[in-house]
Structures are given as structure tokens and as C-alpha cells.
Length: 186
Image (tube, rainbow, N blue to C red; front, top):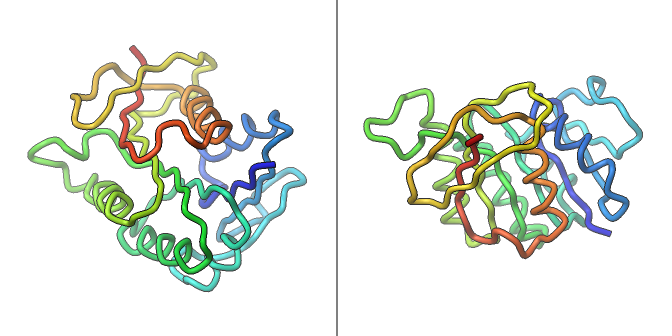
């Protein structure tokens, strides 16, 4: 049984990842959010704040994988998650960043996503950073993966596609280790 903590469990992409992972009997989910009343289902739920390391440590301890799907002050949040993971002995992280974080000049709106990626890459943890193109609500599962530093190609990708990719990494946690990938629809 693979124990997975989903940080930012109320987001639209995280919700789709949860739906996809619910179909896997070998995955046990714990959902972490500021407001767990918004979360449906019978999963373990932990209300907490990513700006508080103690909240994170309580949620991370005993997990196998931490999946991060956040917005906001990603520099501080990612540093707190990294610290909590190191202090609890959990070393596998999958994190959602954004397409365009390596373009020059970089749009200022993308700076938090770049900080998240840079912090995780420098953390010493076993990581997968996923840089999706814009999300759609499409029902197709159709995506293309590019490795950093390859140029990102394609266009908007469905949340279902991203969830499928995340699910494959969780199912085989040795896949896509220590890589930073773009995901888009071809």
C-alpha cells in the first residue's frame, strides 16, 4: 500500500487526481487543506496550513509520497514542505509547477512556480516536478511529456490527462525520479 498525502486537496487539479487515485486499491490517500469541509469522500483528512511546519509534519509523517498542488507564496510553502519532509524522513515529492517558468523574460505571475521548482530541485529529495500547460475540463486523456531543458510543446491539457500522469508516477514511484517535465496536449 502506497500512502500519499495530497497537499492542496481542494484545488481543481487535485480533485481530479483524487478521483483518479480512488480507483487504485494500492493507494491510501490523506488529504491536506486549509478547509477540509470542502472535501468529499471517505479519505483521511487533515486541516492545516502549509505556512505552519508543525501542521505539515503531522500530515507528512508516515506517508510514502507527498503530492503538492498549491498556489500562493510557493517559495515559503515549498521550503516548509521540504523541511517537514526531511524532519519526518519522507523523501518522495511530486509537485505541480507551471509551463513557462524557464522562458526569458519570465512573466512575473510565474515567479512563485519557478521558486517552487528551484527549491525542490535543490532539496535533495527524490522529486518529480510537473509543468502543465493551461488546464481544460476535457474528458480526454491525451498528453505529451517534455524533459527539462527541452522546449515545451503542444497546448492546453485536460485535468484528466495530468491526473493520469500523476497516477502513473504514484503507481511506480521509481518512474520520473529527479526530473522536471512539461505536460501538454499535442
